[in-house]
Length: 181
Figure (cartoon, rainbow, N blue to C red):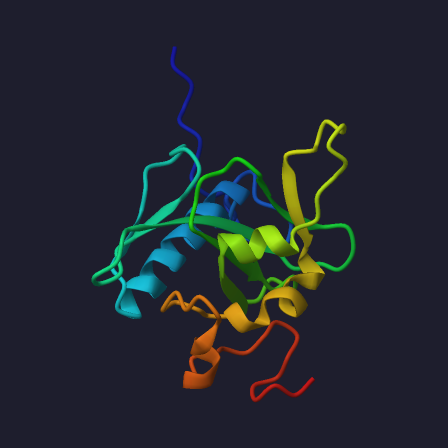
């Protein structure tokens, strides 16, 4: 006899495999953040779509008007201080790194950074060339705002974060509207 299919949610409305305090799995969070990035780019005037799962190197493809297609690698994490990282491989081929950080309190507040790959590479931590993690590039989650604040909500794909001057920024996790802490 075939086993009964697994329920999408349990009796409490929680997805099996989801972490305590949230109603979705890590896979669902990653997929949602990829769709979020594609939607925000499209609404900013740059048509974009999520590529199929397991596509090599990038998660979203965007087509700016009069420019080559842009490959975007999306990394999503829940905010926490300390040893928690956003990472990618040195050999990954993409044009932009989208870092989506969700608030750690289970709230809906999120921050998205659209960072050019060259800028991400410049600021990334890396291990010794002889270590087994020599090809990893990474940032602590609690340092992303300091490193990439100029690229917050950069859905127009401004190379130098010029979107800030146009007032397209959004509030930061842990920060009140208007920039007050």
